[in-house]
Length: 127
Image (cartoon, rainbow, N blue to C red; front, top):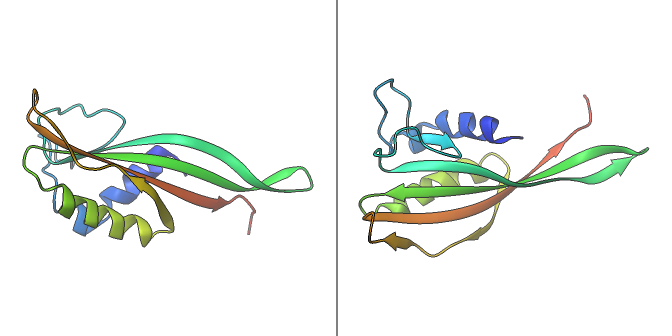
């Protein structure tokens, strides 16, 4: 799984996409790495933080682990609700939460921020 696939998975989840606004083109505020619409709140930014093969057979990788960080940005403190919807979406699709950072507030920008880390294992075997 890569970031683009994860973003598509998040955008396909109706409970999660009910929370962020849409940009002028109708795209919900869930982005890979950086947001082209910096003033849409709440919004999610997805980052791939690690990728490794974790199992092998006959010198061929058969299992891949990918770790992701999802940052949630909001102007109002709605982080808990967005985080809960995110967790329901990801845990229901085979992701495991590794860690989450305490809510933060950036006073200069007046933005609340939460970072959550997940991992996903994917079989590379055909069939």
